[in-house]
Each structure stands twice: as structure tokens, then as C-alpha cells.
Length: 505
Image (tube, rainbow, N blue to C red; front, side, top):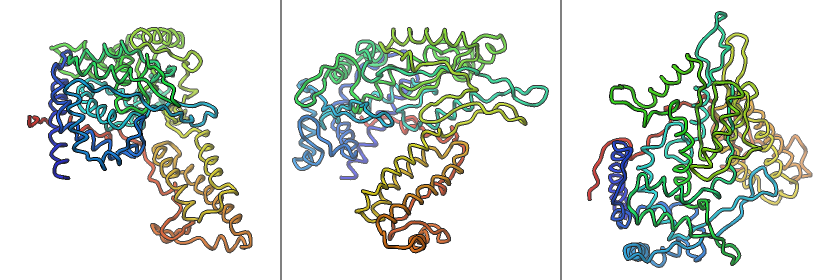
């Protein structure tokens, strides 16, 4: 069975490589025949494997079916019936089961999450397998959200490198910032308010197969069901759907397209030029900076984006209004007037949970910094304190460590590339250790403090360090996380874009 899965994956990879190479070579053309691949049993099996291997497979949609129940009835029969249903045109997506998820750090606010049925997830996965390489070849390098091999760290490092002053003054210090202002973009309900008509129009620019376009339209109009109440979805993409992030990227790529001159020359490319689109845009930025013209450089992660501005504050404010009109016209989305603001680089701004700003050093001048916001560290301390409350002493120390360690490990891995991360990690380790000591004091009230401190055991990783440990489970120390600067070269290239290949079909 594993050999069958590997054969399916190899065949699907060949199809994706063909789509990617065609899309790269024909940026203004449309792919006209995709239905045969979409309804191929190998594509459906590959999409099923992705859905079945996800933890969300244990969650049922409105039909009550889970991956486990489908496996009990037979995977092959399920996929064959699904293929036949697609080919005879009888397939219709079911409404997604809506569930409200509390927003982190925003008490009383909830985010609606749609849970499609397993059948719909498989079809959406198959559509994504074919659409992703087509649009991945056209997405620009300043887009980082929900794309294979890219992350929030890459977006922050790109901003840091773009904001680094290049020229020194006579005193050898860098006192002139290339982008003294930044537009912080905030879209009101991005996933809930995307215009379906405008989104499908952008999809038709690259895909001419009407059956695929119709299928995507059906997913958008499927609606949501909660407590026996049906909600129509006349706008937006269902959060929780497999294909939703890709569709959002297709729509929001209009943001960076507005700044083509300074970002990536695609329609402006001329045959006489030997440089690619990125180098041509960099040359345009240099020439405009010498001529004293304003430059706008966007960086986007899904629906969160910033626009670096090299001009004056008045020019940045005017561009914020123009960008709001452009976004409303091409996507149907609105910028939040309260949260979309123009900020000075010297004041700093928050992006993707990080603090970015320009730091003045009397020896070198201005230097960009990516730092950990104080509020994020306070939130982690608050979460650790809640998990070690007096009413949580019923379990063992090992169980409590298993509850804390994933939170600590994930937090450290996310902020390990920030300035001053190592020092803050050590402070947080001390706090977590103290909270665990207080938790043990309540659990063992008759024990002397010295007995509790002496109950620390040598670490299994570093025997010279004593920490809280229960058997093989020990406290995860953030201070042991390697800290360094993120490098753009670490971003992974998608498998379908690595080398050429022809599908065996």
C-alpha cells in the first residue's frame, strides 16, 4: 500500500511540475483542460492521504463522517464513488459546520471557523493540488503567508534587509533611513468579505476550465450550518477550508501588483533587458531614490501587510487612502480606518506578533531590529501562571510538564530569531521554574522548601544542569534554544519548482 501511495505522489508531482513550468513560461495564458486530472483516482487518493494524515480528520462535518468511519467502510470504495459523482456532475458541496473560536488576547471576541465534510475536504485538496503550482509560479517574492516553504520569519527578515541604511555619512554613521514611514495595513474581516465575483475573475485569468471554476464557485456558495441554522455565504471564503488560504492569496496579490514598479517587473519587462523582474525593480528603486521620487515597497503575509514608504508623511497618508480605494475596487475588501495607520520607523510597529523598529547606535547610526514585544512575554507568563494555579495540583509533575513543554517549545521556536531573545529566554526559564516550585509547594505542603529544591534532577540532555524532571519528562528550557538571525536562504523551494518533470499520463 505504501508503494501505491509513493507512486501516486510521484505522478502528482510530475503533473504539478508541468503546471508550474507552463505557468512560469506563459504568465498571460490560461490552462484550458484540468478536469481530467482533477477526477483522476491518483489525484483523489493523494488528496485523501493528506486529509487522513491531518489531525483534523477526527473532526466531523455536518454529515457526521470522520476519516476513521470512512476507513472502516473502505477507502477505495469511498474514492471510486467520489470520482463517479464528480464525472457525472452530481457532486454538490455541503454546508460547513460553523464553530466559534475565541480570539487569542481578545476576550469576548470570536473567529468563525468552518469545518467542511471529509468528502469536501478531499475535493478541495484535489483542487488545491492543481491550482497551487499555477499560481505559485506567479506569486511575488514579497508574499509570505500560506505558501510552501515560506514563513513569518522570512517576511520580517525581508523588511529588516530592506530597511537597512546603505549609505554612510561623513562621520561614517548611517543616519539616513531608506524608508522613514510605514503603512500598517489592517483589512476588516478579510476571509468573510472577499467578493466572489472579483475573486473568480482573477481565477479565470489563469484557468479556463469552466468545470473547475464552477466547482470553486460552489465551494464559495456552500454556506455554513450552526445549531440547525443555515447561513448563506454571499461573500468571503470559509475559514477552515483547505482551499481558502490559496484563494485569499489569489485575491490579495492585487496589493503587491499595485506596486509593480518597485517590487517585481512582470508586465514592464522588456526583451532588451538581461536582468530579471526583481533586479529590474531594484534598479527602478535606485533611480527613483536618486531622482527624489517616492518609493513604496509592500510586504504581505496573508491578510497582514505593511507598505514601506521612502517619501514624506503626507505622501504616506495619501497612499493609504489610494490603497484603500484600490483594494475596494479589485477585491471588495475594506481597510480598517482605525487600525490602518501611518507610523514613523523610529517609533516602531508590530507585525505578525513581532516588534520592528529602527535602533540608533552612536557608533554605527540607524539599524533595523526585530524584537519580542513585551506584551507577548507577559502573555506567556500569564499562561504559565494559569496552568500552575492552586486548583491544578491533582495531576503529577510529569503531566504538568507535558502540558507546559509544547507551549514553551513553540514560543521559543517562533521568537528565536529576535534581538535579545537569549536573555529573555533565560528570564522566562527562571519564571517557569519558580512557578513549578510554587505548584509543588501547594501539592506537598508538608515538605520543607529545601527538600523541594533538592528534588530537582539532572537533565537527561545536559547532566550538569539540574531542573524539574519526572522520569523521562523534564522541563523544556527556552535558554537552550539556539538563537541566531534568520536567513532568507533557509526558505524551502516547493518540490514542484525544483526541477523539470513530465507526468506519466
